[in-house]
Length: 285
Image (cartoon, rainbow, N blue to C red; front, side, top):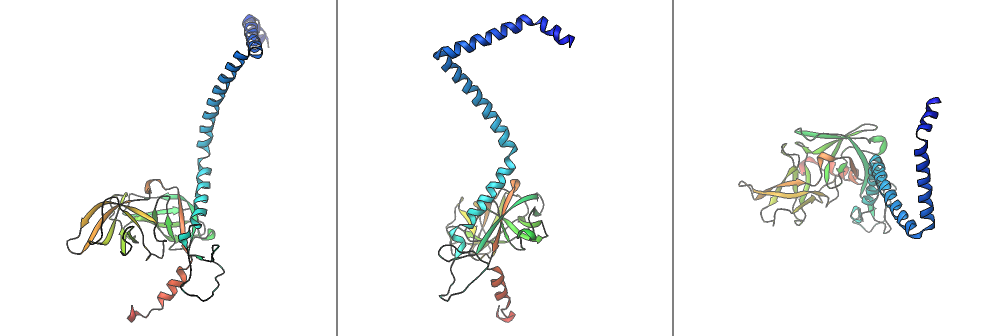
């Protein structure tokens, strides 16, 4: 206490000076419109800069929540795409209780779920991705997986709360695809185990008009993915001398180095199609 009193006594004149200075400035600003306007502008500028820095810090610490909200919004938008709905190839009336329908009564064939990536490899010959969503959250084996920009892979293992995805960067992965401007082709995409940024598109006819930068998308022969999803863009064109096909090197649309959220794709009619095709006699296949 004695030290505080001594401190005040020592700087008493300085404190009085600062107090009178503040009072004089306050009186000047209050009763002079020119100074009042200038003070208000400067104060707003300072407060604006402080708010800007505060918002930057706040945004940084809320990125996780923002990403989760964006993933949910994207899932909702994907589920509203008109391309994911289709009518039956018959005029007969039928009822499917478990499937979503749009306002025209068309059945939604593909349904999307968002999931957070908790583990991901890119430097192995066979790469896998782990997500924090499992059977209890609606995940099933063989669901397709889509990233923010393009195809990622396929679900191969499911537990109660986690699932493992076979990445497109896996020597055992094959995805049905085609060039966007070649609707008649039925090609496939695989990975050679080398550069994680590139995959290979096979069986593209030499009659097709191909150039660098062309887009490759999922085909209508895929039961895992809706047709038209981005797979990659043509980076290099090679000719297979032993066949009438091109071998195209694609730059992947998905950035496998920075996967945070993915979208699981459920083909709601896959079970029916698979069960029917399984009944085909072996001697007729």
